[in-house]
Image (cartoon, rainbow, N blue to C red; front, top):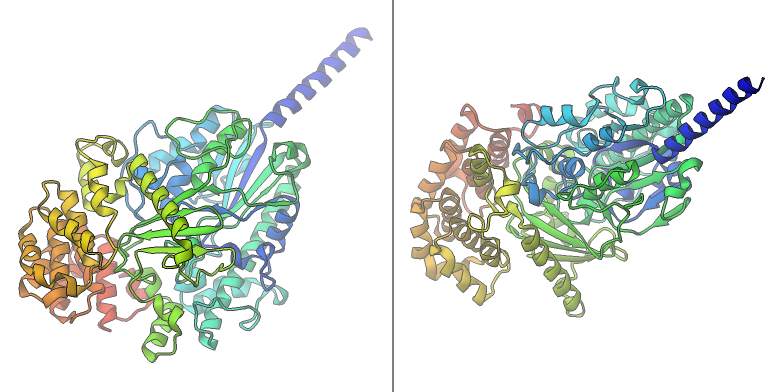
Length: 638
């Protein structure tokens, strides 16, 4: 009897020890959705939204008001998530690039596996790096499709599972034809789950018309379907008796997938809904409590170190994010630093700083408008309605400004002006704040050695040489960041004589990247200020560095429609290098002069074998702007 009792006690102790071990290793479920801003979710104050499952998680858990993606489009955001490193360090800021990262830079689930976790991903990877398949295989026990989930782990093994829902993706909210949206979204909602066209407020930067409301309703209904699918997932978690042992983290991958949101370097492009739900067993792991709202600053590079902290693993030194939960939690920062670069065929470079209240954006290529040409957006009916309304002259000054060149700097008070309608950068009362945030951005660029200052073709050359952008940027002899940034930092500040003088002086600099940023700055200068410098700019057409020659040709064409500029642009549009071709076509999309001299070259470029999607999409946008190809979904595929 005593022996029998001893075995019972031993068994009970083993169970208790096992439970204690499990409590140190919580199950973690990520519920991720696409292309969504918090403004369209019920728990963030939108009474028209139908998101009861998300709202319940927020009510019982922790709702973040200051969570930001680090990129304004999906693939760079996911690079930051999986590596815990800023994309301007890894060189992965351009949407759908494929540059390598160092071998030591593992996807963070790899370290969670070493901590005993079973790691699964439902198929949304899109990490924007070279050898992505090998990276995925190393990071995840299972990845892809409905089969990957917690249900395949060993008994009692803690899991880290990512389930991604794409009903709210831009394809449903604006890009796909309306009939396709009806089939994919509308038909899968019950009457009470649908949101009518007149049931919500329109953002002020959109013209309020029946046509626009019809398109905007897609956002609400796609999110309603997303919420419905989330409810089904949570039901499965309950059915498997795992709700009481699983921390649930819900978030969107970047801003709303509609014009001025996704791909755009303002708060609306970066701020995301973010909720953490804790079961009773793990409520002690929340630094904020539960059933609360926090304004703590977090961005996507913080996710990897936080998951490792919860798993009991040390954060690798290369990660730039901070743990905001677990025993390695770090103090919240004063600022977050965000970035937006090329998206598909849309050239851009924005560096941003936010303290959660004010949002500062530095536009280094402000000749490109907020609603720049991106083929995947141009085929959407909502974008076509907006362009049509612009031509009809029915847009108000704010709505019209989205199609105009940007200022060098934006400063928005996102608390009193959540839709970012008033730029405070020129406000005399905000100059100290503006200087402080500008200085913070400049300090970050130099300290992190922002490698995205290199033209994209340069980074491909680095990658093809056996190196990678992350390590290349650390070599000051090859990449003198202070020298380069000194001239890049003034790009876009128009009509400042001392800046123009600096740019002109640097056109003959021995460093090709310095020359590139000098002439890039000239592209934003008022034409009147360049009329006395035609010969200096013309001399650059024969520059041995193609990005300098292409950019100089674009500037010269704006100046005087020079035939030499036309010849130089055509040469590079039809050249072997797809990056220089993309650059040339992008410049022409925003020319103030006749585009017809370039039609034949662009048509040839479009038909060339081996052209990247981005280069072909830019060509289609160019031809579409002249109504030479239709802006429809089938031509997007072509």
